[in-house]
Image (cartoon, rainbow, N blue to C red; front, side, top):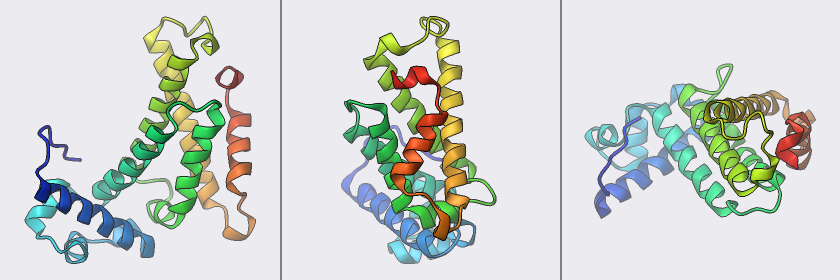
Length: 193
């Protein structure tokens, strides 16, 4: 995934927004593996050169678009009163974009999409622990490696649960509230204190 270090000018920002909208629209109707760079360019009304200045592939662009939405969600819930509120906001996003996430699974989420989900969850957990330092067990407190392993474990487990939730047929799918409850029930108790 390409990331520019300098601020984008207005034209580049418009192109980026058009590309994100296009990939989300196309991925809602077909699996991301079937979405081509050419189709995205047509939908976004940009050139292939513009496409490749912003991303390496359709799946990377999809990961960027979903990652952008997730970062906005986590910014909104940065100061929540309960860890379940952040979980709920994330699952509402996944539920809203379920067709896209399912289209990015074969049989698991495409690596860039999974990476963005895990990264967002890890950052959310780190924020939670920073604002609630008393919840961190002594075995993890003050040990960056141990705490990093704990957040990685929790994030990967949450994404695994989300993948399983997405695999369930529509008729038997649990709702967002039940999914939040199930994920929190499977989480180590210390996160919930």
